[in-house]
Length: 157
Image (cartoon, rainbow, N blue to C red; front, side, top):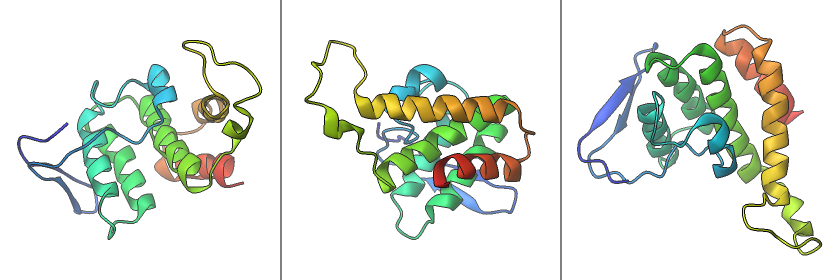
């Protein structure tokens, strides 16, 4: 998607996160296999947060953790329910985890035949992590520091 006009989000600390006119975006960096759980990146109340997050990640000067934190706060500001914000944040963190730390479940892809609509081993591992995280997040407060700690514990060990 190419943006037709500039828009931005100003976080609680006053930092302005801008998505400039003409920027190209493909969503919130939530793995596609989770879209059925949290929604596709161009729908719902988190759409604008997803676009700003995606644009921020293309800027080498922006720290990924800062962009992910902004995404959670922008989802809240956009009207998402607290549990939805926690799950969306978990989704972008899982996307980062899968990319940065590499999951190698697809090494086994040739063992079983793929069926139409079947999830591959990597998708299954991502979905399993998300399910465990979602269960843990349902039991936490909505405080971002707590949410971040729970997600980090599950993904970083």
